[in-house]
Length: 471
Image (cartoon, one colour):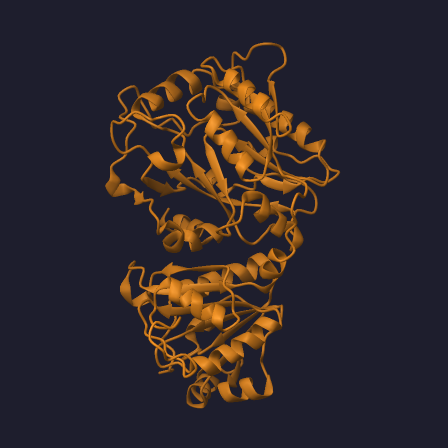
């Protein structure tokens, strides 16, 4: 058995995702143990590093399936040290020689490798150079682990918890992610650059429209708001907000003819394509009035996250969606989207995982209508490997659900889109007797630990894989 514990499969799944998403070809497993999990990762090149006795066994049992290196040789001779074509995974335990390990990882980092570390939550770390009580490595808590990584010149872009293979779904293991390209991009962020343009469409969303517009402005975006001839005061609120933010907001009613008997989503999407085409060189976000969008990097705005994406060479961003649900009979209080909802569910339908809804506009008009608005399609799309967060609030209360589904939506669907294209079926499961509340037992609490406990599923495709397998 290696001095490193066998790493949970989740770490290797994350490594596999980033191999696919970044185009890297090599995985390096420091503390590979038996090598079995390393060999499950789909990579053009696999490198296993461990102590001599384990490496000898790997060579005997897995000859030709990977390259095997003794730890001391790798450290001293740089035989297998990775570069910017590599993903490094490394599990840490209380018995790990941290000083030596972090010395090796820092070299990998300097050469451009993307690094994943994992450790049991609660592990007591002790370095010879830091032995005073209360030092950054005194325990395995997330903040202390962050401090330890920072002290060892391995700044993480994500630190959170993930299930350990031996503990079922218990979040008993810490995982950290280190990406030199993102860290470099952070240092290049500019003040007062070109703001992203959020193109927001709405119909009868008076209870949330002002809060959502304000949130987008605070996230560093300008707005074009398209109102589909609302009848509940939404348009008046849009105009009021535009008057108070004349340099940040524009609005229009669509269609231009003066009414909208049916909800014709294709035409709205084509209008969004037209608006976006007038903004070459600018990030554009296709969004709606019941959504709050966030960067994958805590402390950075949506605009800053998009700037990082472009600095690293991406021109399109995907989102992972979570649906917030009412869990009791309380009415929704306008202006409280970010505070009223305590429970959510991850996306469950295929469309929830097709969310390529932000792009760096080029000279070519993007296609939104062809995918029903799920994917901005254009020649030369390069997806950012880190997915952003979409917080979705489609139904805010029992009363709101009944009105939205049966009055504002289902009665207005375009017959062509509904019957010929097969769109607008997401409310088909509701009936006049539907309760429009969800039991807490089928939902996930949304609290201060959300990002630490679930962020890994937000920024990767692990959730999509889980849903597909379960389905």
